[in-house]
Figure 1 (cartoon, rainbow, N blue to C red):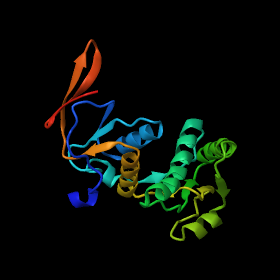
Figure 2 (tube, helix red, strand yellow; figure 1 turned 135 degrees about the vertical axis):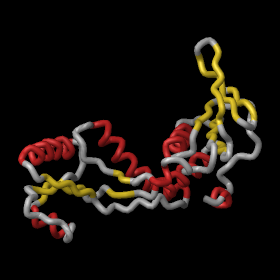
Figure 3 (cartoon, rainbow, N blue to C red; figure 1 turned 90 degrees about the horizontal axis):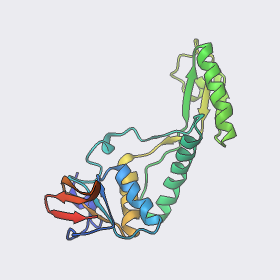
Figure 4 (cartoon, rainbow, N blue to C red; figure 1 turned 180 degrees about the horizontal axis):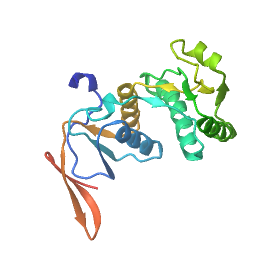
Length: 209
């Protein structure tokens, strides 16, 4: 990954103190930085030992799916889809989200019963979780062998994002909110006092936090 791709994202001089320091410039770290600035935090530092998305984020699948009986998971997934749309407007950067839909197959009576229970819970939470016939599965996915399929379950609004694009958009949004991002900055230790974390030790200096 070329450093020039990140121009404008990194800070200049590493500070000696910050309100909060985030370690790791993947999608989670950049999301934390972005959301902290939205909550009004301005003295936010993010440290990445290599370049943004250089860890596990760059090869993540990027799936964003909502069907679940877990209310919190549904809420988080639904929020993420809306965030991807608003983030593109806010930053002018694409998240690569493509609402191609999410298809699940039930091939046993037990799995069919489980999916139907989940469908009821998901629809109660506002998710458009549709039970479809094997014929409709074939229409959506022509290469599928449907002889042993009892039913399909399809969520049209779900899809896939580009993990790198999404992370870069979050990073830009965080910087627009006042966060500073430092790449090529490894954290080599954590400072403690009286049982509490008080800062980070990096190869470029210490940061009290």
